[in-house]
Length: 354
Ligand SMILES: *Cc1c(COP(=O)(O)O)cnc(C)c1O
Image (tube, rainbow, N blue to C red):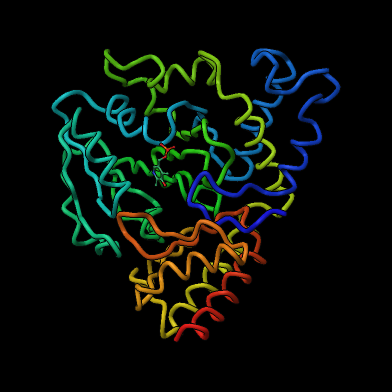
């Protein structure tokens, strides 16, 4: 029996996708082998790769002057890759710091470039007119959705600099205008597919300016030139991500996901805001649709909450250790029934214990 798994990542994948993969695990499309055992340069696998890119472009309405790169090293490698590809030593870059993932991006970039922190907050996003932008910045980096606290940008600051955005925990959760960004990047293991793959969507004029010393597999030009196959990619992760993209199209694409995701999140926030036991610290205007955090006013009930929720088949609700409390990650693959079950559980728990 599959439980409802609220893990922040790696996270739940659509059951239909898992079943399809299971059915063709040993013999993929009558090739006599698993897709995992097949050359990444075979025509069969190349067709997987091409369809995956085409489906992602369709889902996100990615303009033609943007390249889609399938990369190694997760989102974290791009924390270094971004300054390597877009700056020279001594350049200045702007970073907004809205939490742990922003801070990690800042820390890594600071090893290679002059980082100016334009604003800092943990449970809100400072008003854009308070941001201390620098005139000579090469780009402005934001974390679109801070996975640990559940703070999500709902609009963007006005700037003529390329906006570089970490979309790891919110990519494909709703339609966005890709052209508002210079670059979007995301690790796959939250809202795309298995760990091992990351996606970089980059405006083509931002490719080709990497430092001389950029490692080959960190240089976006390498991925562009070799169709993301300079070396062996994470083939099984690509294949499964491709299936997730087809599943998303069958669900009605990102408009349909947005309607569903907003409804799922609001069910939880409504319950939390009405409750005498639970509370959420994030400013309502920037609450995440993907990671809903909440704390218990009586912290001595934390362990009982985790134990009883696990017994009810609701898994991985413990919040990140740096922030505490609870977190329900409700990515695309979390069915609405999972959120309903969590709401019911939380109400019953509050009644039992208060
Ligand atoms: C999970 C996460 C990362 C790290 O992703 P990796 O693929 O493990 O490197 C980076 N940024 C955000 C916002 C995340 O949620």
